[in-house]
Image (cartoon, rainbow, N blue to C red; front, side, top):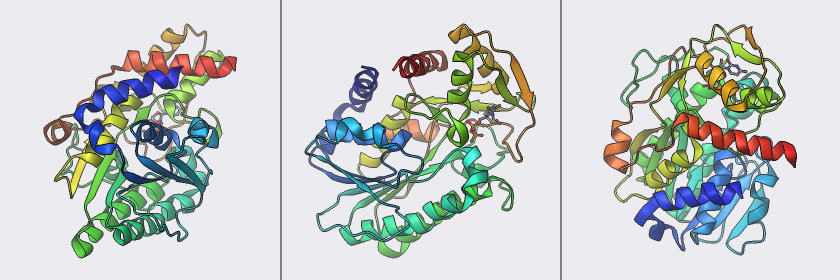
Length: 338
Ligand code: UDP
């Protein structure tokens, strides 16, 4: 039920771009993950031929289960850091494969480094072979602890190369470098999305997968303490998944977009303490707030400059934080009841 609503919103927002997607052959790496599975679902719905590649270490087969019976969807369990070849033509490669949770940075730094270096090298090789367009999902983490807020695409970053987050930050920076190298040397049509904190249904709340919003919602629904790292004065700007997917697809499908690097997120900035209070209120939870040590290099502020996205994609986020949180909370409540 929920899925139909979210997909419907994305389809509506895509407008005339929808017609460009039908009949295209698209490879989505990390296609069973949180963002990847929404992308696959929308593309399948619009009549693209979708090949979803995932090694299922953080993606879930259940995320794409409803697509398995569709004639225009193929699932391949494969780790993109190893070579793979396709005989059929491909029009677009979307490289999303990578673990993306700070808890995973500590536990699986080598997999993260590989997905965004060896993995992107393989994915770009496929794009080169097929003369396909390439979209890379990079991250606001390439800016590190940004000193310019809101952060524009021109900002060059403030990253600790040997800190706990370096496996992600530096790997994504290297990934961007790979993308630009393939454009320079092979004239590949490439686009880079810098994704800022995104949330919504299909995020995993548990263990090493949990980002702050699914964790807080899960904790609140169980009346467990909400674990606030540091004093909670650090900020983030949270983008609802339907807005993020619309932005990514617009970047992938606009004409004359080669070489574009665009921030995609929302600029509604909020402290983590305030976020915890809103989630407590929306879930009517009895949870206490439990303050825990701040992880190393946790960026103190994060907020994108979205002027470029508005200008070149004609895109801006539409779902406010309270509405998006309400939708996400309903999803987690439904999951608990299942
Ligand atoms: N955070 C928190 N409690 C948690 C999980 C995260 O206070 O249980 C904080 C974290 O320290 C960071 C923010 O929430 O400042 C966002 O964390 P997330 O893991 O979602 O992603 P990040 O933006 O750090 O990549």
